[in-house]
Image (cartoon, rainbow, N blue to C red; front, side, top):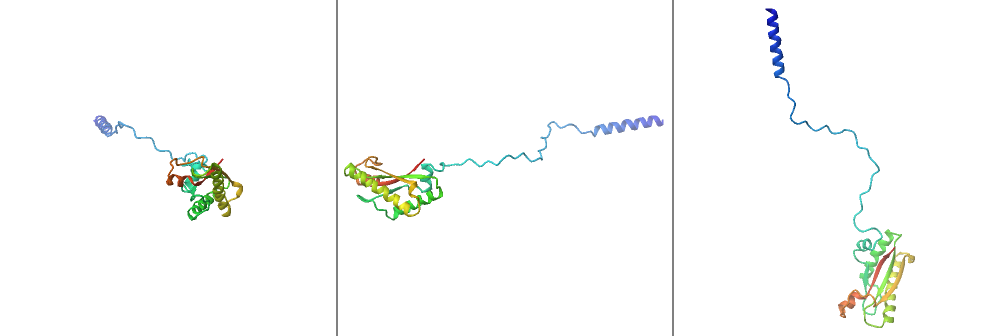
Length: 173
């Protein structure tokens, strides 16, 4: 009877243990995350946004659109508003010493072609001389006069004439 009793207990134990066995899950969990550090290559700088340094757009952004100065009729003197604009340009040029500019002199449509070319030249030289007086190397600035040949406003009104009496600083490559 001992053998029978031992067999019954053994079978009961096996059945009990089988009932307690864990079932496999229906879905496996994701694999563990790697704990090793990723290989690091050379750090790359983020791609620059905005205009390229040395471009006309970059220059205009840096001087807050003050690359144009305006003059009174038959005048080529630098007033306080013009001086502030030219100082902003000089700061830009001191920050980027490799950049050169051309100052374009313009006039309105009134007067002869020759007179307006001479007046445009005086306006361009006036802006250049002011920049040189505040520290910009003269070799970095060239001038050209377009007289009345390149108007930005085409009407024959005092407002249009005022827009055309100007000196424009342009980055050259």
